[in-house]
Image (tube, rainbow, N blue to C red; front, side, top):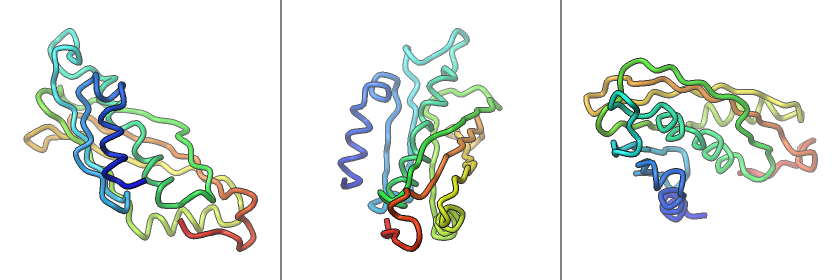
Length: 157
C-alpha cells in the first residue's frame, strides 16, 4: 500500500479521527512516521491536560506497522507489551516520531534468521510544541520468521 494512502486511512480510522490524533507524515519506505495529537475538548482530562490514553494511543501501532512494512510478509510481527511514563503535563499539540534505519532492520533480520522468536523494545518520546518531553513510550514487538521462509528461503521485504 502506498504510504500516502496508508496515512490517509490512519487519519480516518475512528480511534484516531475522534481523539485528535493526526498522522502528518509517512515516508514512502515506511521508515519514518510523524504523528500529532491536537488538544480537543473531548481528549482533555479532568485537569485540562491531554488524556493519558490518547497520548499512548498516538504511538500504539507505529513500531509494529513500520517494522511489518519493512520486513515484509515472511515475518510475524506483533505488539507484545507497552508502557508509558508521564513526565510533564501535555498541553496544546504534541508530537511523536518513529524512525527505522538499515542497522536496526539488519539486527532484526539477524536475530530471527534461524526461526526463533525475538522480542525488541522500541522507545520514543512525545514532545510538546517547545520540544520538551511530555511522555516516554516503550513498545515491545514480537518478531519471528515464518516457517516457509526459514533456511534461506526468505524473500526481502
